[in-house]
Image (cartoon, rainbow, N blue to C red):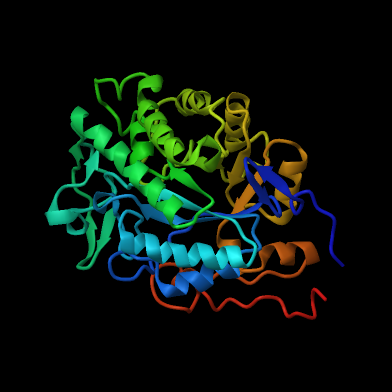
Length: 365
């Protein structure tokens, strides 16, 4: 018996009609082919999950300098654009909607992954803790090169190129990756941005790069074809900020009123309104009054409750969508879920990628 659910009801996201409020979250899978082209297996992988109201692709670098991991796809060459076009056509044939997540990892890279062995770039020359995965194995992160003021418009232009290629590839929109310790996040937080020019210092200055990237993408798509992802309290990739409520409040306020498709927050446990992430979600929702998407370990019950409460409009699911290509159907039927296999998350072939079973047809008949 199919259960009635607000989460499973349609939602109008700008010009895009979503079949439900469930979003497949962006997840790095490290299976791109030579030239950082989305592999043929990606066609099957994404189209299997077309029952999501919206799919957001894995992080897709906007330039050769933007890469930080082996096997991640790009979206700045003709071959990459053609590879993604096969994916979008397959998703659309099954009635799905799909945004490309565009990113630049900034300091979370390594000379072994950069053109001509160059240093990765960042807002400031601050070395992150941890290691980069290279063809020679894990290598300690290096001190990045601080971007010169005159270089920053070139990086903004790289995001514009990625947005334009996504349009040509047939996507329904783009999500700008401003989360998880990558380049935009590095500009936002004062633990990684100690610049003294107009891109550093005050929260409003540190938000400037994000605003410029959003404006560049909106010139291609219109604002309602652009989403933004932020992770305000995450320490992933050695990130910190002295006052995240002020920093991300400034970011949300800067994005408010721009007509963006949505703001996507990585806020684990935010279904608890009294938790730190719950308070942050409410804080940002007051400042950004457009559609809000939340992510971070949500079950069906927690997602249903947070949408019913009005504290979010959409919920994105990561590993549960990875392991359950028919997740909306399983939620509708209250059916058991496949367990994800972390050993196959990154790299490899079909195992742990396109071989997770769907429900037998008789279950939903």
